[in-house]
Image 1 (cartoon, rainbow, N blue to C red):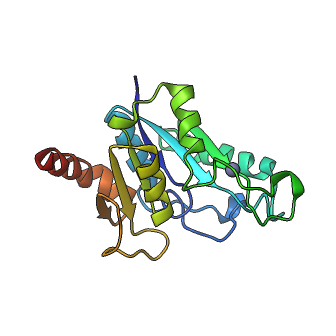
Image 2: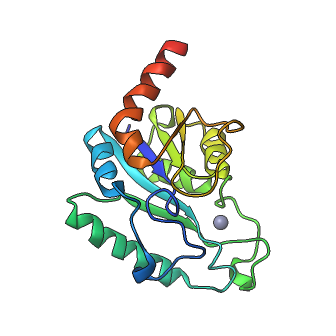
Length: 191
Ligand SMILES: [Zn+2]
């Protein structure tokens, strides 16, 4: 069995932009590539799970999503690291493209993307972590039953007092550097 870190994309890896799909608008949150490298060194698969309702809304296509992920791959190669897999949900109940306009099991906080990753990579959720910038992400992790959920301050405005997350960090790198050990140690003591 493998353990994984499930990463939200926009606001967690790259700077949040509404309906991002253009390469030239993709900007790493500082230290994100280095953080991904550390997560690998700790023995985790690094898997992106991202809601891309812009597809259902007709703002961009699935091809655009895939192209952007290839661009991200190329950027990460410069930092000698990588993402093991990307899962995206192109759906939205109120979309305008009929093919994608429906409720689905993959749109977070549903667990369809995680379920698929578990099947593809033999992932042990009880040893896995989810990191995101929205409470929806945290809920996804809870729904799937991951061991730790981590909220980051690098994207959407968050409600730190009201979060269900196990811990809150400034960004991916601060979690990877110190939070990682802290969270695991604290949780270990509490159980
Ligand atoms: Zn979906």
